Image (cartoon, rainbow, N blue to C red; front, side, top):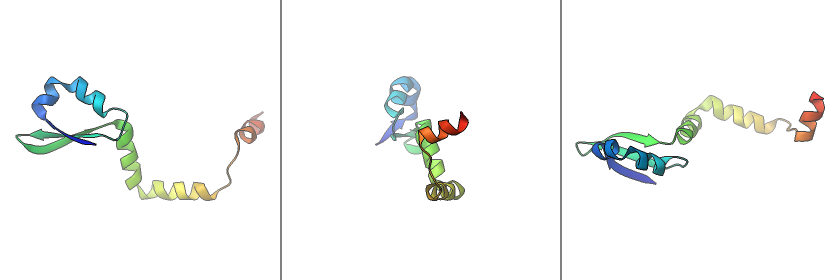
Length: 80
């Protein structure tokens, strides 16, 4: 969900706004003088957005999906 917030409201009520944004894929668009200026997003959501744009990361995910997977038991049996 995208929410539009005035920069003055962000200054006075940051804790409440941050609580609404934190832990999800919500975005707060911060306006300055009535125009969009910046956005406030949860850090995990931002990292997901950046990774989704990274071609090298996407290739590594596709490659990993093609490789053999190991069960938890196999991993711990090999280290014992």
